[in-house]
Image (cartoon, rainbow, N blue to C red):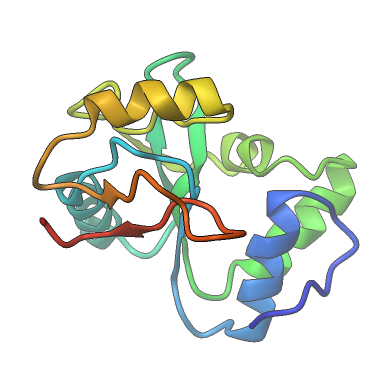
Length: 155
């Protein structure tokens, strides 16, 4: 477990706390609510990241052409610079930091691959569209007191 150790809020707090705990590694950051995410999507992001010297790399949103900060790779050693930029801008928005730092943006092959879910209705709708193989499979009944689990197994 990594404990939050920054003054910033939201997802950036988690990203920077992880980078502070392990500054020597690159961080692949993913949102937890991406039911259409496929292995190929992650493979493409990693391949693009490896093409050039380590730099901020993220998918370009198919909705607004902006960086997707919760499907991105944050390179080793960039945490201190990102924290300083956040403080300078007075912003805790990782998307804003990716814009200012001119992150490498990767085009999505599947426009729905990074669509997220935020409500029970969106979850129910997403479960209808989840492919039977090649992606994450969600249990339709959450464990008692828990939320749906995901695995890469194909049952």
